[in-house]
Length: 327
Ligand SMILES: [Fe+2]
Image: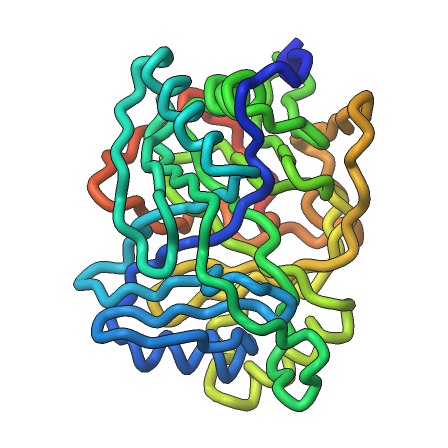
């Protein structure tokens, strides 16, 4: 069986996923996309980066758009419960023989960077500058009214190994997974820390690469409205997949590509997962309703396109299973 028991016995507490740092070639164009079309709030723009946040977030940033020559990803951030967790994590990674370094991140306190054994870069922090909550400033709502950063999805070449690292070594809890019927091999998984379906999802494929970052929105109509906004403001070709409802997670979704090809999911209506004895839901890899409850398969680009992490080599996946792809 690919599923193993969750590990609750770790000397640190990762609260949730918190931010992504995206390399963008044209800062003004990217900022326009994320603020005017999607509806993120601009906290601050420096000489080489824009710091954006969602409507309910009281932290300085959840999206960092970093001026870059390439469309690459610089970092994925997670919040921990207290400063001492950072030292406990550093000790833990040393025991696992994983390199760590303290990185300077604008508007954040101490930030510990490492990577998974399969190359996914991870950053951990406790302190970040506080900002006013925009949630009840309805006059500032735009696009899909993004409420909060919801999750990260990455391609990995070793799905089982990456799943075991996140659950056994970082304390993530499995909520749903996809497995092949014939060989009982795991091909995708959804794991959480904060009590929703996921903070981190993994997809089998050429990796490590970022598949997407996701924002949570109040309801499905906000997603429909974003389709109308994008279709009439020059972004019609940036709509990649949806809107629809996933079988996995039950989420109502839309996938869009930003001007550099970084994928963003607009996401709502998943469910509570805090019970420690929650049984993970298994999906058959060839069940078309796992992708989309209504039966429509995803386009080829959704399975193949992703963005690379800075300086990380991309490897061929161990498993070669072919998903159902739209004709
Ligand atoms: Fe997602």
